[in-house]
Image (cartoon, rainbow over all chains, first blue to last red; front, top):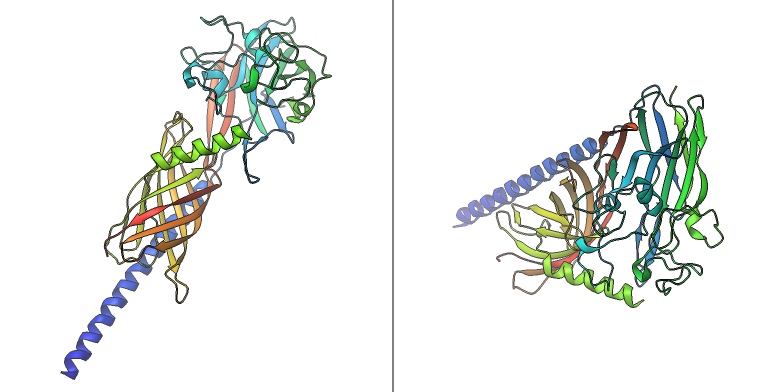
Length: 269
Length: 179
């Protein structure tokens, strides 16, 4: 009887031991898999820069992330819409280099309280200078791309979370190339561009789901003999997106000036 | 303020309605048992929708998916979690920690990105029903870079894009396993 009970206890101990060993083995394999994953994720590549290429670098400013308060100190953050394009010395549009995916594909999402389907949303005020310079007019008379006819001849990507660079290998020998970069953060309303402004009123920027402060446009002229140049803030785009003018009057602009810290272009020698 | 509250309510309701989650792992369930569960989580600016299933032999499996707010940027991800739990003496509460490994499809591409992470959480069994409530936070890191190259009249434009999983995810839900 006693021997039988001892045998059962011994069997139970062995079962528990086997179970624990099994769990330990699984845990070890799992940890190894996770470490392997981490190691794989550490393999990063970088931008290729061949001789003669132009590198455009954007350094984000303190307002790159726009804070939208929620409650209890929680907030969500959005990043700006961006377009970078090139013109020749005469101001003739050559092509788009980079544009954020939402702008390139009409990938807008409705804001809370905005009763419209995602595919029907138009944001002409997002990047008006770029879209008008590009000169493609869509069936609704607006210049911002649609999902049916998205931008296909430029790099399109989600807004980077911070600093980023582009490389361009010029198609041919050119004299001066004029580079533009347009940035716009949505909903960054201020006194000059208030949320409550109605269409036709001063400071109207697309209504309560609109732009807030208008887009800012930076420009740099890059000559073939120049090694590098800083982009200069040359003005703001149309607040309501109705035209492609670049207005040099920056008196109503406040926080938008700090979306970008610095934009540079350099030729790789 | 109204908009903020509405945003949150909408987000939470979307998550609660749509999320079907995989239960998580602790050392406590009996090996060989399967467990199913429901959980809701925030994945950065998007909501986590996870379909999933269970646990076998102390190993948790998650087959999950990621969606944007109104689910326009749907992209699947798979995640494996392994961990262990402790129950403070005299309580039914389980404190648990897990390692996370996953592979996510990058939205808008045919590429996948690996990531790792850690999770800390609480699990509270509901009597002898087999149900447990759980709440946890998941930190994820890793991701990958991938190249884009486009040719246009200006020349060839090159760009390296980075995808990373959102850093912090909060999850809450319940799970069930046979007792």
